[in-house]
Image (cartoon, rainbow, N blue to C red; front, side, top):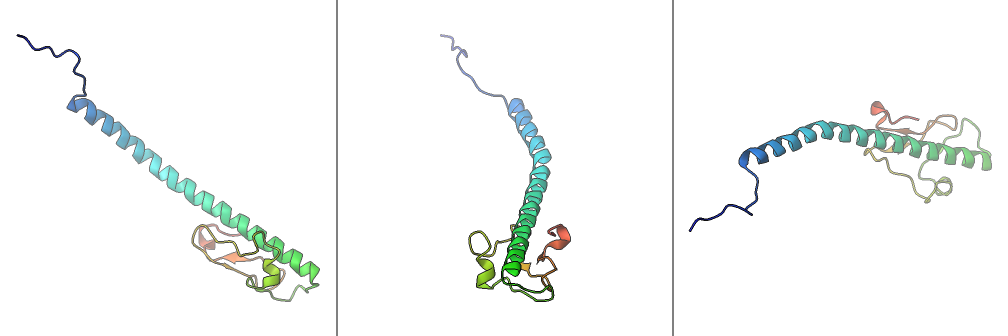
Length: 118
């Protein structure tokens, strides 16, 4: 009696090696682009947070009749009331926000060396 190989499917070792090589090549190309996209998104989100803090500070300063030389604190409860969510936003890149030196200076992020600036 002769055994038939019909109906037995499968991949050869060469086919598996070629597919794994192609998948590896795609991964090598895609990973740096994903990292770059993540960093760009973090930077954009940080800048949006700085704009929100600056806008809240400006609105608070106008409503409380602050002079341009006055200082402010990011922990002031009345200032935080002007920020959506009533709490200080968090930098997605791991940075921390600090106020400007006075009312005319914008808030800053300590990650400003990598573009987190207003």
